[in-house]
Amino acid sequence: MRSYAKSIAFYERTRKHLAGGVSSNVRYASTPVPLFFERGEGARLYDVDGNVHIDYVLGNGPAILGHAPKPVIDAVQRSLAQGQVYAGQHRRETELAERLCGLLPGAEVVRFATSGTEAVLMAMRLARAFTGRTRIVKFEGHYHGWSDQAYISARPPLNEAGPAEAPVPVAGSPGMPKSVLDDVVVAVWNDLDALAAAFAHHPGEIAAVIMEPMMVNGGAIAPHEGYLSGVRDLCRAQGALFICDEVITGFRVGLRGAQHRFGVTADLAIYAKAVAAGFPMAMVAGRRDVMDTLLDKGVMHGGTYNGNVQSMAAALAALDELERDDGAVYRDLEQRGTRLMQGLAALGAKHKLPVLVQGLPAIFQTFFTKAAAPENYRDSAACDRDMALAFHVALQEQGIRVNQRTTWFLSTAHDDAIIEETLAAADRAMAALT
Ligand SMILES: Cc1ncc(COP(=O)(O)O)c(C=O)c1O
Image 1: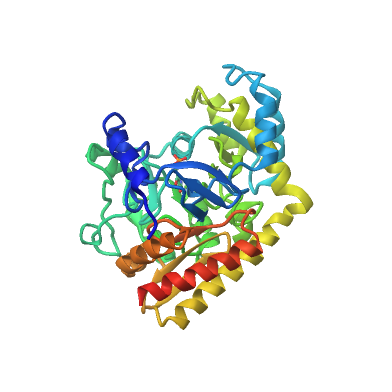
Image 2: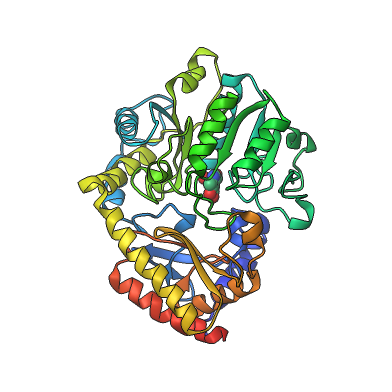
């Protein structure tokens, strides 16, 4: 049995002066306590007890190039002596904005922010200012950060969520004002009729529809064929903006993100996480006429650390790696992720476990269910979470780190040998479950 004695002791000590012992509630979802790490290198993390983990959490997505990727670290190191924040502009921002607009679907202009949560807030404010409307449609199981305006029905208990035809918006946290629920219309995802009904109930009131273009946070589920373009068409017909939250999918499911992969262009898109390969950076990208309201209508967007020197340097260096040979690294990611997905599914069959592997090679999930493949949050919430948790624990014992929902993020550092090592460990972990 692996020992976590030092992590447990650190956690007890930390709780005395750091509220709850963590800096993000998401980190409670760790076994047996939030683990303390000493370093990360490539695909591996090293904890304070000396345990080595092949890491498929990757900071919840950012570490697309693995931990401590040399080209990014070198670029950031070179930038350090130039200062960190100027409260003024610098050349790296110009260069990065130019490159991103040349790359991403629909990105006529970008605006940099620091976290995904804030960038979502900016996009929602822009949509409201541009359309003069207030309500935003969001989908059950989709997470758009922890703000009052967005942390609604992100993972609602099904007994509070109302009927699928007309879901009830559920505040995700104590302390959120009830009034925010009035501005949000919640719908079931992957269902065009459900969205059409939401529009029909609120004619002329919807400013925007926001979604993860492939759901990940509420269960890794790809959109049905034609769903995203159907959403875009409905939005256009109704005078609402279509916002894709690509915080997870951007620079992960492909060089040009989920929109390119699924053949749709949103009015606004939000990126964070993988874009700066581990450094704090986010952005909104999209239509010039909408983004111009920042200047024309004086829509407020601020942030002391936006466009900071190190994050810009990191993003530029990460782009160099990701863009090389028109995204050659993504072809490798795709092939290795496919090998891992297929290998895990085969192991599930071998051990007679109801394992269903869903998602895309760079981000997927192992569900435990005998039912049909989940299509939305309600289906995914009905899968066996206790089995997923047991698999998470069994994998950790074998040196494989996935989150408690058993979501798998891949990086370019997960080479063929690591995939084989992972499958051998997963074989032992599944054997321990039976
Ligand atoms: C799809 C999505 N949007 C927004 C966010 C919020 O981003 P951040 O944690 O940088 O505030 C997340 C974070 O996991 C996310 O997955």
